[in-house]
Image 1 (cartoon, rainbow, N blue to C red):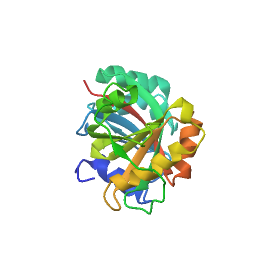
Image 2 (image 1 turned 90 degrees about the vertical axis):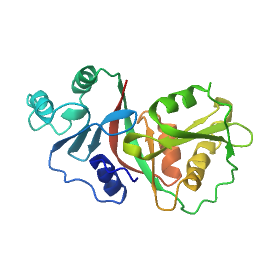
Image 3 (image 1 turned 45 degrees about the horizontal axis):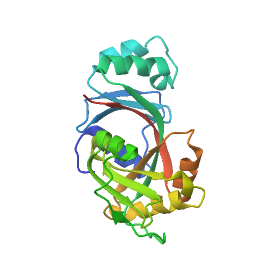
Image 4 (image 1 turned 180 degrees about the horizontal axis):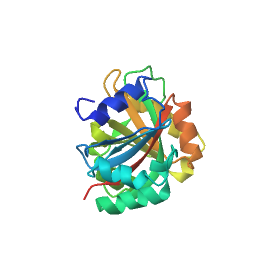
Length: 218
């Protein structure tokens, strides 16, 4: 994560286990490079990296003093999306692992340049730059890896419904560590309600560091 945007530094520190203080602070940072802006939530500490002034954010949150979860409130997020002229993304759990860790996953990753019409690949291209796409040799699952929020490495996975409940999601999540340099943080965003995916990433050794909502730039 070579980008010098302050959000990159905060995410890297959190990945290493050094989290912002749980003091109720709402930090407002400039919009990061790349296709997305964001509200990132840690324990009692939020970071808003978007094209909006700090004064405007704090004025908007002034009606909910002492509410440490206010930046993730649906009403606030809807207002921010409207203010940015962007659709409000879903709330995601953010999980972390590191590149180069030992990987015994029994799967060969096959590069795929023929999947642009796949819905998840098309979505990833909107949210990530330098996207690379892989599948297992049977094509039962697809793995997408690219540069997302503030230049960080992000992975997402989709398993064909006919091949689910066989551990392929966990196997692909573990194999993704081969694709990033040694000790580089690799992040995954998973909807909390998608319990199968949450369990797959946890079983593959990822750990949660926070939550976020993304706003796709025009």
